Amino acid sequence: MRATETLTVETPAPREIVMTREFAAPRALVFAAYTRPELLRRWFGPHGHELVECEIDLRAGGVWRYVVKAPDASTMTLRGVYREIVAPERIVGVETNEDCEAEDGTGTASTITFDERDGRTTLTHQLIFVSQEIRDMMIELGMQHGVGQGYERLATLLEEQA
Amino acid sequence: MPPELLDATFAALADPTRRAILKRLAAGEATVGELAAPFAMTQPAISKHLKVLERAGLVTRGRDAQRRPCRLEAERLRDATEWLAGFRAFWAGSFERLDDLLADLQQGDPR
Image 1 (tube, rainbow over the protein chains, first blue to last red):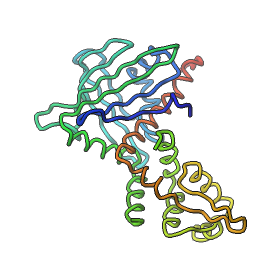
Image 2: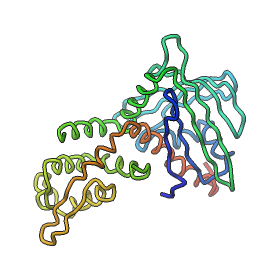
Image 3: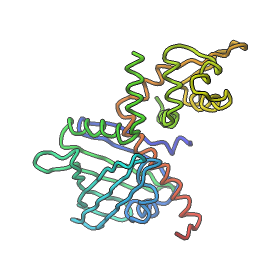
Image 4: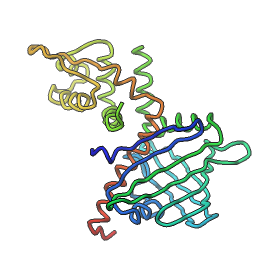
């Protein structure tokens, strides 16, 4: 894998996660892949997972909803509301998933930017959570969703080894 | 740990036989023959799994020409459970699939 196609995940502030990834395509195409359900279904979710439901109302105030099915048939639902859409540069919104919602219903602020240079696109996805606790919990959940059973067995392996 | 190595690590760990091999090596070094026995697998089959684990840096092979024992690189395994690793794994997989889709679309994929 070329270095420029590596995913970077950082926690620049206690409530934040920022992902950065470069793609060998113009940003109009990357933006389309991010906003058209028929394209999202072809990539969203780890290997072996499937985006089984994908609804997008791409406008300020519109809602989106994804359901990802894992190899073990368990599902995960992601939901949100768009605040601002500037094609093909920026998608701003709030994610409102049960797992990371505050009690008053406020969600995670999400900003996705698409910057193009020499025909390549740098995608930056910034997530700002309502609290550090919820951000940390999302990262823990990411552990489970990211590798599923493999992670739990890995954790067991390490405990036994310690 | 560099991100691309983290991805290779997770890919290596995605297989239950490989996880079992690591568990066995956590108890001490073993040769390919010693590893194959409990799985009732052939040595070439175990060697294929060992190659994946070596590429991820999780296992190293000794230089002793006779035995070439396999050894677990525990530090690498601990790095893989670093806090952000699972979160990364979710998105890294998705973005690899997106790479493929973008390549298809630019090659005039009719879908």
